[in-house]
Amino acid sequence: MVTPRGIVEKNCQVPRMSTGPDIHHFIMGSEGILGVVTEVTIKIRPLPEYQKYGSVVFPNFERGVACLREVAKQVRRSSVLNSCKYTSCNLVQGLGLGVCWCSSLDY
Image 1 (cartoon, rainbow, N blue to C red):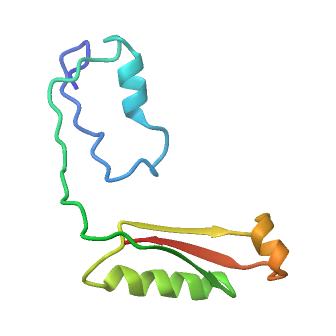
Image 2: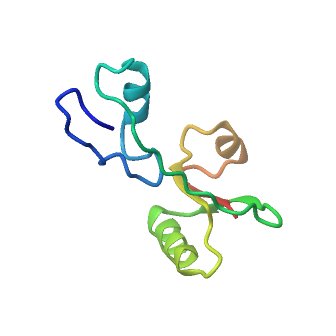
C-alpha cells in the first residue's frame, strides 16, 4: 500500500488474522484515504486429497499444550490448531466433564 505521503507500507504480512484487528478491512473501507493498494501477494496451496476434522479433550492446559507441540512437529502439519477452554460449552457441561481443555484439529 502506498500512503498519501508516498510511503510504501508492507507491514500487513501475517499468515492468519489472529494477530489483532484485520488491517485489510481498514484499508478496503477507507476508499483511498489511508492509501492505495499497489501490490498483492497471494499464497496458493494445493487442496488436500482428503480433509479430516477432530477435537480432543484434555484434562488440563499443560497436556493440551504438549499435544499441540507434538502435532506441530509432524511432517503433515495441521492447517488449523486451536485450543479453547470449554467451561461454558454446553456439550462438555452436559457430559459432566467439568473444566477441560479442547484442541481442534483440521488436517
